Image (cartoon, rainbow, N blue to C red):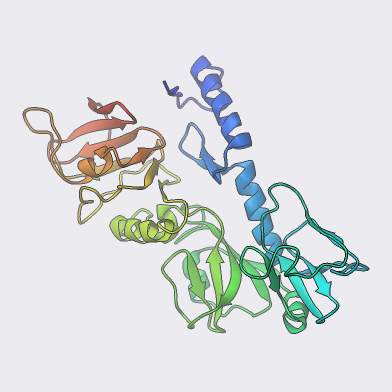
Length: 329
């Protein structure tokens, strides 16, 4: 049975908090997911998440040419922003495959095709012109995602960091790296944007509902729909986190089956408001409650629901169903 921690201030020496945190240490060290959630509902990076993020950001900072080695002499690639020369063509290549098991070893007298292949997840040519340009890339920090969309961003920047969605610290912060080009002004509202100079920046940090505008005073349902579309091609984890205790109301209401096939990761400080009620035989009517009740939905932790129809709170727990509780909203 999962341990339910307290919300006592840090540091807490309560046994249940110590046991809960022991599990979180294991999650931080061994999980292949990018984030874990602490006992207050706040998310943090796991080692895997830190490694992934570091690789993406290193790539955005520009390329490092490996001196004195090439595909003919053989080499060891330790980082995703290191590039290796193919002397037969004069082209530089970067390794876009995994570094999870260690460095990429290139044997002597190799070619990109013979030591991993060419293409996404393999060797990609960066070209001399691209290399000269990308060597000057730097990072720029914006206070909000909204500020990014209204700014002219120099082509020299390869990484954009935002501190919030509409305000600093509202939970909509993110890290974006340049990846290709697109139509100026194009964006899905959170996971990517295209500058006036047609440079496309894509999100590399985990997406939450706040990433797509789900912050107090805004349209939570629209943000939820955008997040669902984005994660459907990623890890299929819908993260509903906020920096402060909040009870988001989703209008129109979330339909039954909406979450099917996804993992629902709701912060402990979040209560989902829904208009439905419990009927006289204590079963659930259709809507938001049915959406999370389905066995096709995975829950990271219990989800708090508040039915405005009868002003009653309920708690949905993994493998335990839904029970009436006292929830202040």
